[in-house]
Image 1 (cartoon, helix red, strand yellow):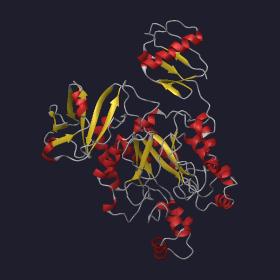
Image 2 (cartoon, helix red, strand yellow):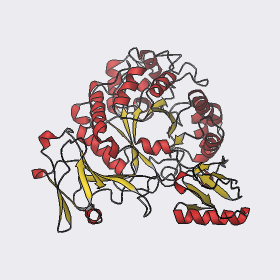
Image 3 (tube, rainbow, N blue to C red):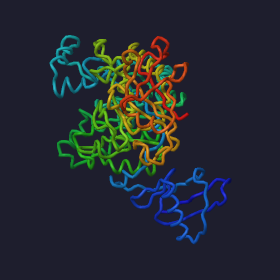
Image 4 (cartoon, rainbow, N blue to C red):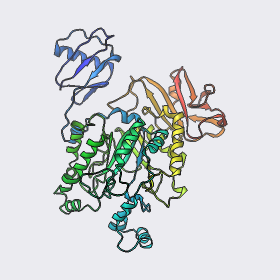
Length: 521
């Protein structure tokens, strides 16, 4: 593969280097499986290229080099698809909003699995609910006309998500019930344009979200509980792929080509292997030929044994939060209503995440290199419950003060303080690591700031931590609290522990999860 390097005009020499076998990426050069990132490694590459191309005395302003990348064609094989570099926007975004909305929002009882829990694996509470409230012979399809979404105002939703501090939004384009929230060409009378809202929900929300400078993504269930074509493939032990060829692939391609989402969030994969879903073929098309090939990111739910092994980012399972650093980019998808992803009319206040619990999830996730995808379920009328709005707006207020410790941050050497489990760390580096975005800082990295986020206010306003002690020994650091307009904080090292005197809590702006910023004087 050819690559080209071009220095800025202020550099003494502006070569165009072409060498087979080398691949250029922003911030890195790659040959085979080896990635050269350091200045020393970079100089060695230039020396090698000089010999190949008979160039002499290369002299570059390294910090000003622009790498012009040739397009790579990805093969439909996991080993090749896994070499794709994660689009930078996704790692830097950190905060997303997840929306589970569909016909299941009409009964709004139990969860979004209502239909399956009524007919496929009968749940006593669901069956009793239907017997008490609906006539004999009532079908699930009869809920669809009641899904009117008459108060759905996509601009208001987008405004709420922006105020919440989200950088991307993911909507269920189709859940396991098979009802599509766009005018699917393969889903007649079972989509949001033909029945129910009589609106292209995906299209309207995509426009509103992008008008707020947020990224838009779609969730899409691979399987459908009661689709007869899928059930026939299943009966054939998935040796036939009629459903994939005639329904799944056409729907996904329509979504990608018509709405150009930045995220494709796959689900409902667990009954069949990736070969049945033609997952590698689909991703190769996404990465090579789709209109969003350079921006789109996909998760890891593409068949049995695939989660946690393949994908631009990993979800593993719902509400996954390991509390430790992972080597691969990951996402914690969790829901504000602890009992359901879809809207429930019966939800109780003690079943809703508190603000502290919500921030705990966000902070611990980002500290360990993940993104937080926060789910709320809209009502069938198209509104978002006040309790959900309150939680999201409180998060947004917190991020307006503490966002510099979250957005664009990287994991630090320590994630959770070894002395104080209520303190989590992040850092911001001068140079973004596009090859390994979840990696801890390298020896050559220049760190602009280190952040310690306290989930609880310590007794007597004295914070004791351990993991920054060696750092504070290495230079003259100043410590400040984000949002606090007072002086820098006093700190001392006592018996290997860092003791920091915090300001009077009554004078601190933030009411939850306080952030200390460490920078060199």
